[in-house]
Length: 156
Length: 133
Image 1 (cartoon, chains in turn purple, orange):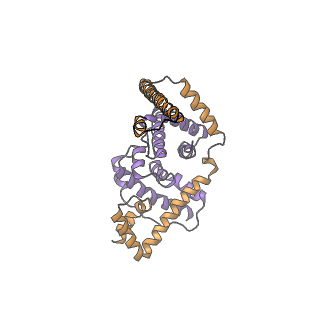
Image 2 (spheres, helix red, strand yellow; image 1 turned 180 degrees about the vertical axis):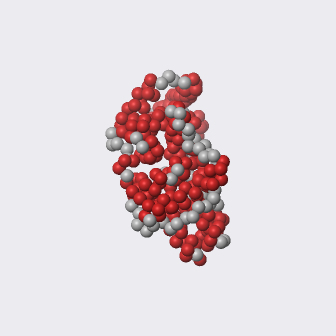
Image 3 (tube, helix red, strand yellow; image 1 turned 120 degrees about the horizontal axis):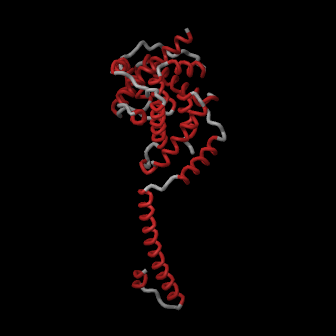
């Protein structure tokens, strides 16, 4: 199972609980096996699995009474504006980076993790999160700027 | 291309999401603009740093025994699952195909062995008998 590491890493980042994350990965793979006839050979299997994971996660949040990560129209508009982008500090530790990422809003964390860590295409991220490609791009743009602000603030 | 345009495209450039022509425009701009080249390096460093931080963080790594536990659990759940209708249909189609292919193979083998017997009996194999195979 070559994609378990990747699925677990993403699940663990968002759930922050090992038991929950393992359960999420197990349910993702169970659903993937059940609907394997829907997978198109030759397409990115990891992206397909990541998409199922996001759907399972979103359904669970809804069942627990927590709303899925969503932005209002005003926030979406804000996401497309460009905040001040400071330079990336010279020496960064893993703790600096993970701490700064943790401090930005979850909807920006989602796209950054899927794009920069899991290296999914804009199209695959849009499909996984059920949002338009334009929204993926604007969230990435703002999310990365916020991340740089956080890195600078933490160092300041 | 202006610096402002280039910077808007840099993330898509790194992610290899640009069309070929736009990609060339960015490359041409980078070749003559040290500021944008430095900005590109900043963004690449951030992206690489994040990926490495995730892969090195002990909290985000899977337990060594998780994969084997998962395999066992998935096997158990797939055994207990009821076979859906579409699977039964595909199973029937696959079985029919297998039967047709099996019968064809049997006929072909019979003909081949007949030809071999003829050859062993000093019979000259003609063009016609080869075609019959």
